[in-house]
Length: 64
Image (cartoon, rainbow, N blue to C red; front, side):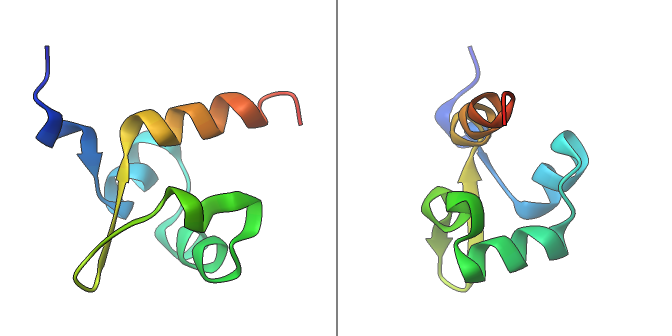
C-alpha cells in the first residue's frame, strides 16, 4: 500500500496522469469552474491535489 504522501500530487502530475493541462487547471481553480477550486490544497504558494479527489471528480463527470 502506498503511503499517504504519495497520494498528494502536483498540477504537473495531474497533467501527466489525467491529461488536464496545468494552465487549464489554473483557470478552472481561479474561476472555481466545475468545482476545481474545492479540490485544491494550498501549500504555501503551491497547489496540490489528493489523487483520490481527482479520480472521484473524473468519475462524477463521466456521465456529463
